[in-house]
Amino acid sequence: NATALYRAIDDFNSTYSRLPQVNMQGDEMVTEGASGQELLTILLGKEDSGTSMENPKQIPFLNVKTGTNKAKGGLIYSRGASGTIEGLYDPFGRAFMVKFDDDYDDEIQDPIVAGNIIRGKKVIIYSYGADGKPGGGDDVVSW
Image (cartoon, rainbow, N blue to C red):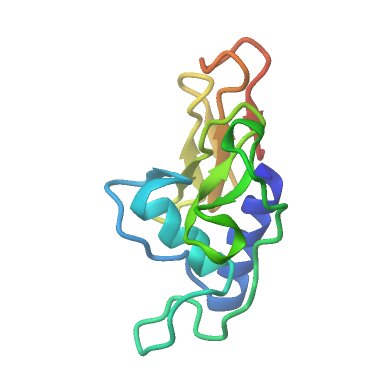
């Protein structure tokens, strides 16, 4: 799911020559809550039609399995697939974290290894794994 989300955002960037614009603070967000739901809706090509669409071609960039229980991971909808998007979760029931290269300098501070810089990526996706803490070898990363 982390890789699929990374690819979806990268494909969006390739198609539209920009990153998806979602209402968030700073350069980092999670795949649940208002910002996460907005990002997932854009990447699934399910935005309401209008002049301010981020994905006006309504391309379904994101292809992940729908889950029924966020504790087991996947794309979760309230009230099943006909409901609203709740979020995208790792196999441990935690929302993925998304960090954008919002200044387009091809550098993102590594959220796992202090002082490390990830180069050549417009976005990274990660979660802290089973223990919920950075490091320890169980982190899920897209780079």
